[in-house]
Image (cartoon, rainbow, N blue to C red):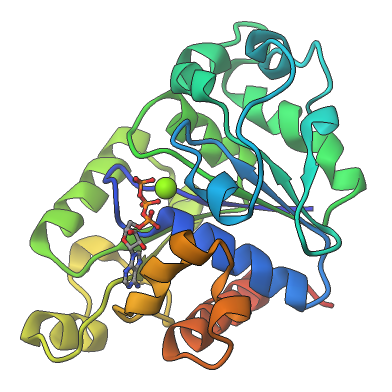
Length: 250
Ligand SMILES: Nc1ncnc2c1ncn2[C@@H]1O[C@H](COP(=O)(O)OP(=O)(O)OP(=O)(O)O)[C@@H](O)[C@H]1O
Ligand SMILES: [Mg+2]
């Protein structure tokens, strides 16, 4: 099983939109997919028509004392499942601080899902803390949606500093541009030649498109909501690029 996290220190940059659409694209491609909504806000749970709230004590679930797998919900798409959000996830950082497992706690917690799924997508809350440290251990790829703006670049640099990544680990952090409007000079410029602090972003980028906002009104991923829209095709290209990088061969 490959594990892909959508993560950024900044909020409102497109983590949830990408998590849901990439999961659906991977599923369309024939992969059994699980999306874990790790954000107490529960946005991806909402879009996928799930019910927020985990049925057991969250401390037990996150300590691995109660099987997380029992909390998985079906979505309207067969073999595209959801581990829903829970308001108590606002304490996620405290819950992930496990002395016995150290920073491999999240990695251990998700390992059993490998029996059923080829891809696990983690929709993370904004911020930089214990979760961020553990993602480096748990995820094959951390995708960082980045709005082309100087403040976003600064946030990306803060993430790199905080994580204090070794070279090999840094390669696992993949920024991609979201909310791109090519009529704006800076956006067009950065697509051609990204600022050095960003490193090598994914080649694929997602345009600003109002249909993305409609996902949370109509509660469907773009592939179902607007199959031929440019934004749908952009997420499809992003998935294809990710799939190739992760050497997923089906
Ligand atoms: N490419 C896009 N075009 C237009 N709107 C977008 C695009 N990407 C995201 N949005 C909108 O921006 C808002 C934030 O997006 P999203 O919820 O995906 O971000 P997030 O990083 O998950 O936010 P949070 O940090 O609150 O979890 C949403 O209203 C979403 O519909
Ligand atoms: Mg979100």
